[in-house]
Length: 335
Image (cartoon, rainbow, N blue to C red; front, side):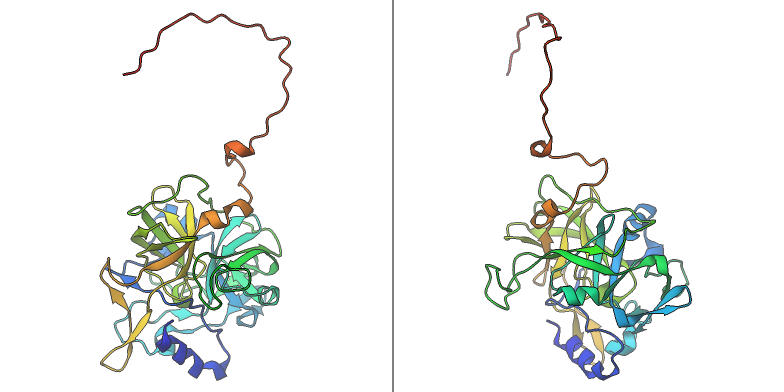
């Protein structure tokens, strides 16, 4: 975990403005920092980002007329960032990320929602982003963009009772599927990969809320290791707050996993301020992503999504009226 960030947040805990961000170990920058704001994304990426959700403590989402106001703080001020750090002047506030995978279902990390009580105290907010060039981040959202938790459908976190890993050792899969208090309107559920698995070297990207910032896209990443039980390792540019973010296949745009763990986020600079941890593209420990196969069977298929062969229902058919047809003989040769 990132001690620098933890200490900064603890020091400000008395203010009780923001929740502690979700840092299941750290995340960081690999190679060039190519993270993009919503307005910088292509149209197809914006369509995907529209179905990525930010997660907030209920106390940080307050009614303001017919809208809701998000309680935020300045990223740079809160973490004592160095002057040239990217997104320094943007707001932070969300503690985790998630994705819409059903008409009322959110997929996120298991360490983001630890209990039913915490789920009920969480608001799921769509549309938290910098939507136009030169504009401020959206921190007042319409009520239609804010949802509550109805229940935890399924949850798993390595290191907890029932896990094959030792207590406190958060390895393997880490996921939660949440049912919202109503169906989501105006946004499409995202497709998950139910077919062939990824392999080392495949291209991937992630969309979420690093450090609780407005929604960001981080691409130009690849799978480093797909051999781990329950998760794979990649060189994604992610941070605390990205926990629960959907990780997509660059080619298919389908969800391949859930961002859950990673390397150090921030480091002390000799100048006395905080800087983002940066590694060579192939350096660092990498970021851990729960494989979508760990939870995909619990996610209902989308309308029009083809069923797997074992799910296709075969019914009795009356063949009494069908007359056989004699096919012409032919010879096939195989080289």
